[in-house]
Image (tube, rainbow, N blue to C red; front, side):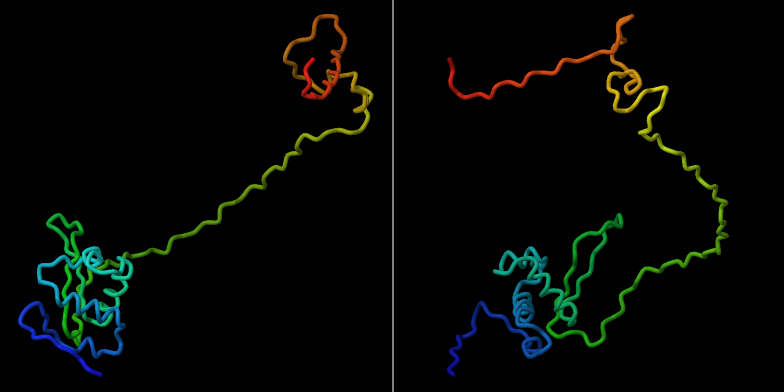
Length: 186
């Protein structure tokens, strides 16, 4: 196979072959690291900045950076400002991974002293189970039978309007059904 090379007088990058020969890296991670090494030092190394100059999207770039970080080629550190608020992420890009990663200083955690709390078993009262109102289906001499619909006072004790004095039970008239519309007007 023939390889055609150009004379490297301008627009070229010199980098180590270490990451290109590393079989633990995917092709995407190798290409991403090569691209990152070819960029100037003050360049915006955020995932959005890298996605602007690549065909891959932000999620794909994040996966590649994560892989490079796991292999030790990229170190990301979150910078805090003077107020202690989280700021930008600072990237350190290495041509060869560090063999011994320095342990990051983790903030000290206090181990709170936990007392053995005394748990009480409160005495529980037995809840009353009331009998909900039930429909009486048996005939009673006081109220008449349930099938006797002429006595509406017993079945409906709350009325919208009081009955006229001396009037008997209220009776309603049934409506006559309307004839179906035929669409023909007379």
